[in-house]
Image 1: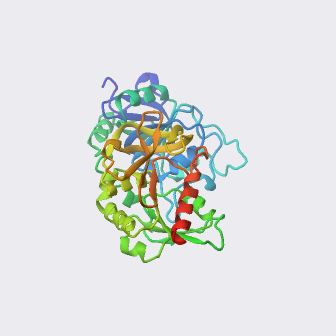
Image 2: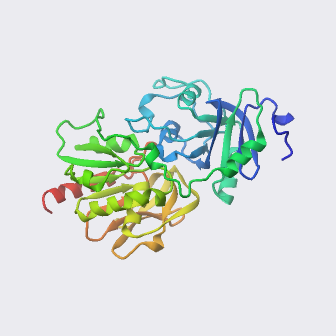
Image 3: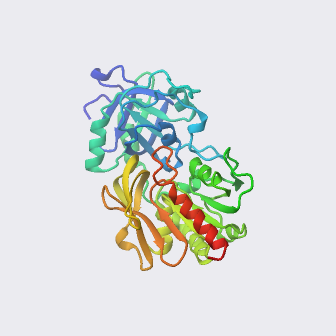
Length: 389
């Protein structure tokens, strides 16, 4: 590196934050949010809205999010737009990168500035860098490991930051679901929950987003959330009408070491099952498929996906760096959805049982509502099964 190891170069002497990649590349900018440093996988997100939902999505645990939209944080923050489930409140991303520094909040819903909110959530922020160059690099070379650091005096040990990025384990082989999952089971009590629900769903919390629980609760379903490592016996003892495998972070193969046997037992019991994102990948593993690490992943609210059963194309929200290997799908497993960006698998179903999953986020938050029908399919499957159909 040509820069002095402890101070920003002359052209960036007023800079107070830096992103140091494992290959030694440095991006200097202005710091905001938490002071300190965080290591993670760098990904870019193409959503133009919903930065608060993105940063609190537990699926982003272990990652640093670079936003391609230039203006992030300008509408402030509020409690309602957080996606970490409660209890507990789960932090998602480790860092946030944006082109322009956030201005004063300009929205009637805002209760806290973006900078203050980042501090509250212990998220390190960096603005003022060329996010287009970073995005291009990720598209060409894949998601790198890096360290985002914020120091008001602009002094950093650059060699140590690069070394830290290099020595971090990365996401492959990392089970983060058990870290972001709730520690105790609970009943979801959202504002829109139906008072007299007709159906009961057990949600296995691998890092569930709040809006998944809201969508279920507002549809007349009683929602009981259990920790990621809950046994099949404990889940079946609740006599659920259906089981939902939630989204979450990390390597599905690592989480699958304890989750697949549970999923297999639920399938064998004949209970309707829906998987979302990580839950989709875990279902695939339980059925005998394999997962793969993607080069740049899918992160955004503008992804076109085709439902192969209806031929309908929907625009969906996505956030994943792993995917099911479609060539590994075993006999009896149908591919139901496919990405029109790269042809990757986005949905599967069993031929003879009410078991299916999607790679994307039907609950959105942020994103379009094209795929809300997935929840209705799940509810219809539960109702039919309950009636003996």
